Length: 543
Image (cartoon, rainbow, N blue to C red; front, side):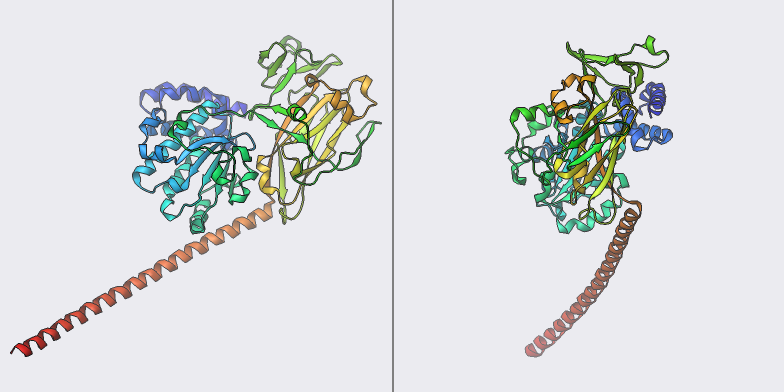
């Protein structure tokens, strides 16, 4: 993928000045095309296809020029839409994503409001894109509470879909439609036919009592049941968006189990008390603060204290292999942002990837839970395979942002050198719609020779943060192939049925209109005859 991004970037930069001169591109978009992440978003949405990614990027740059994206300001947008509070960014969801809120009830379906709403939407999207440097995803909340047919604007909906897919790819993390009125159900079925399979996977249609599955109470507006008593003012549109880069991870729930790891005489008994789904044990504030983990959404980051046993290998030591840029963040830490070869004093000849350092982790980026028959009634099981790449024993620990949604067996243990071990992850029934916001954190640390015989849980408590490696996994839920096809077939049948219903209703309305026209003609004829009779009677009396 990196090679594709580099190639596309070279093509765009080569043609950029000429396209600016002939009026196709905006010179101010140069900051975007210089960003590898900006281009990578287009490559990702086109699944690595270089030509399609390049065509989409060119189309986006031309659209930005035509729409005058860089010229939009709050002052240039129709004041009535700005004052109404149709769109604004407020707070974060449980995954730390900024929330872009669309108030359906406040949107008016007319040409002026439609154009202004588009401008405001693009203005906010562009600010989010720039501030977070094309890396951070957002939550889009369509609050349809109290809206109706008068607020339904299919053109605006099409525009929003087009923006997310073609002009701001990689920005949308999840789209939540809240309290969709039954009168708009038919419209929603039509809208779904416009969406790609990937888009449908990150859209949730929910009721008000489900909103706290996505947004915590303190981040939720009070009219939706939260504690945020914010009253909209246009000033929020010019504010800098707050960036939540920290999340809380809890220890994964583990069943009592005895773990014998491959290739090792070490046997450990894990007696972690199993917690009821959704229930968290009480803890002291200082303990909670220790679990705060910093990460970047799109870049694998490893934080190493300078006194750590792991050291960077220079380019001279590894020959043709490339080293990463190292950014000093403080006198005590080094943050590293790309693949780099490292070594430890214990085994200087062993070079491993920065992803995991001590462990090779499969899957690398994402756990995909595949549902079969009834994901709301049955458990869904997946696995993580950890392979110890080093000649030392490595201890591991599994944490998750939502321990109430999963059971993990085992959640802690040790892996002997050059061995692999499988972790079983069980998604509890009824949690499939929550998976998209969850993450797992895999901690690993080399076990020193003087600590081989101790308890793993105690060992983790004694470790210094500087000796712990972290790796984050996203989560996603999908249906199995056969079931997915049947669901799509059902949806297509429903759409066809809806279209036939609309045709029948149109025909009936036409027939009724014909009957009304005939009745109107008959009534007119009767009225004329009555007038003639009236004139005849009047003439008879006057004669």
